[in-house]
Length: 275
Image 1 (cartoon, helix red, strand yellow):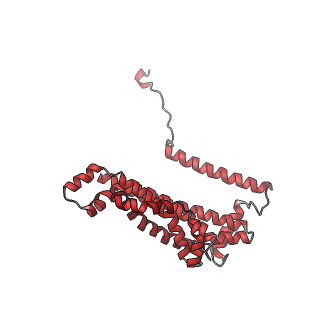
Image 2: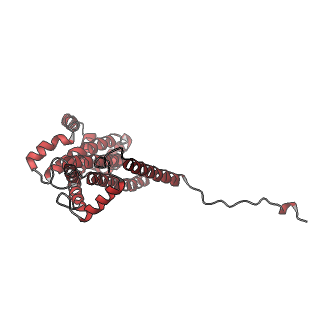
Image 3: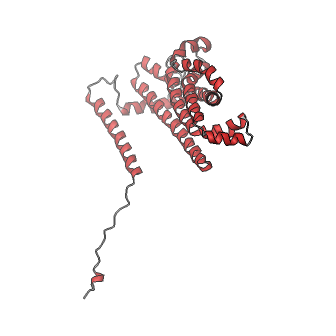
């Protein structure tokens, strides 16, 4: 006879639980698969001419072909390197100028009131409005796209840095003043670390705006670059090339943002650890 204590319910082993992060990843993958499937279906249906809506396969073939065979005077990677070079220069200039200007506006009231009228006017001018001047001043050289990237990215750097500086704890500032810290030490040791999260948020926004501005500029005033590739594809009625260029723009923009997000996360961890 078996004792009651021996009659225990048998528990079935369950597989590993799917966490929330995995579910969200699956949802993202499913949405991408659905979008591609819908694109394939629309392209195969014949509702739109192939010239207007090539299939994903045609776009992928055009992209791979352009890696080895030049189009509009260069291969895809050469066009991409030209775009990245212009973007890097204009974006770095916007950060190098915009962050100090934002800190100065947040710290020195006279500077803020003197500079604000010019800045508030400048930030409402669309980056592409500078294209005629870029063409006149620099032609199709690198200077024009750098100017347009700068004009697109500069305002976001200034605004977010200014907001971060203004949110600095006044008690911390007063404590440092009591210890004899001057303006320079306060900016470097208090204002800048306190504003870092806001600065990084601004840099991410600035990167997106700068990248978009660059591609728009290359459609008009450039002799190379992904934007130039797209407009040449449009002129040659090579829609797969146009869409391959668009896919490249989106993918590279995503990589830029992911890289900045990783930097932001590391800075955030260090900022919280030092708080």
